[in-house]
Image (cartoon, rainbow, N blue to C red; front, top):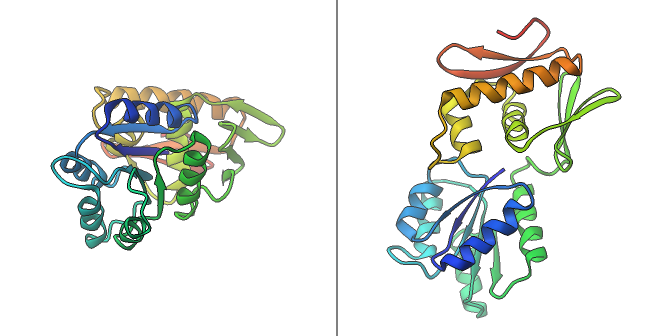
Length: 227
């Protein structure tokens, strides 16, 4: 799961990123509203943690633009503005939740989990396809009584493929969602992790295969062999 933090206080943004990264979220950080809008509107994020008082474009304008464009990415406003009127304004602008500073890391994480559940993807602790299941909290891939732990990037690649099991997932989407928009990762990085996952599926003796759509991306299929 990839989260965007839009926060102009650099030290606070770093702290937020550390809190979320420790829970195995992939995190990108930007420090102004214009850049935040560009990132948030890319469609590559599962949630946004958004400050209101930002340079270049304030958080409410950023949020209002997203909602006018029918972008439904879950947004948690995190701000020092604690008045009831401010909370009402933020929620009416389209925020899914509103948390005031100072905050506890535990409450931040709980609220991120809550807005993520509203998308439907994280309501369960397990994704299943064919004869395999992916345990989301444990980052474990299972088939029957056999299981194997996945590294972070392996887990994210497979999670994205399983969530989108009815379609081909482009390599570019995997690069952005797993490595981040500012990463220097290239197609070979994706190919390497696809290879790792294929070996682990083979270890589990699964009938699920990761197939390649030449020059497009990857998709899951039950039966046959990896193409």
